[in-house]
Length: 328
Image (cartoon, rainbow, N blue to C red; front, top):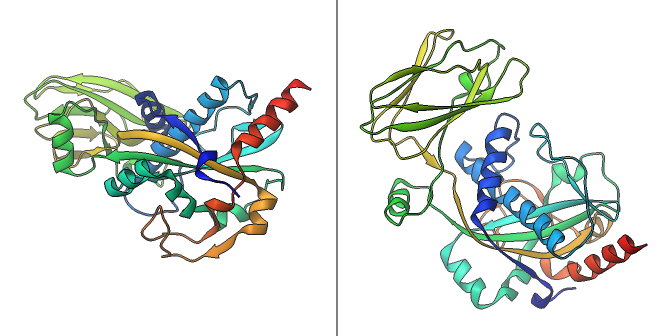
């Protein structure tokens, strides 16, 4: 059992969002979406999850808690762990809290998190390649999003950062055949200069990106040999259409000014709540059907196993143990 005094609070910094965005863009062709929704929503969830993992690693470094990095998580396997504590596989599960009232209430009393649920998707828990001594760390991230056109405009007026993305349709991002798209040509109908980043895959299915600066109504060809195009990123909100032509597809794809999505996460705080070993989680967990209401979600979108946060173990004890193992 834990209390709110056992929670570990980590301040949020913008570089965590930047790291999450870099990962989300590169992993876009490979990620599996359990939660449903648009590509932009999926990318925001990935941004938040990676931001928490980076904050966790930073905390371990600052507190001189020894850990092993098992190689950076490959973009083709986003569920693969990459940190071990005392030789034990460590999987950080994070939950994004972005409702303003909920954040305000938590800032008054973080003990409200004790009523939340520590969730693991049932299909993920049932997957192989796990040991019963694996460690699950459950965490929460408070932060705001500016996803609507109205909120994006407010963010621009307030001088807040945006990261504007347009995800390409399946015919471009995940084609049935594997062929080069040809020399992609870009054109902007905007009144201002645009810096555009293209992201996709090369002939060997490795991540490939190219950045191009387009003057108003200028047509330029990309140099990179893309086989897929997963996303397009622009440095500012365009006031006109952006077109991309593939000679191999014999198709011009137009992106309207209203079709850009903002995946920047305005993070506030990371809270490491507690942990359980895989064996401990299995012993305590109860099945939670799709559509269940929990503290962090008004309705779950997938079948989960759940343990009340109040029944987790305090992380302080674990970290002291790990320090002891490191001294041996």
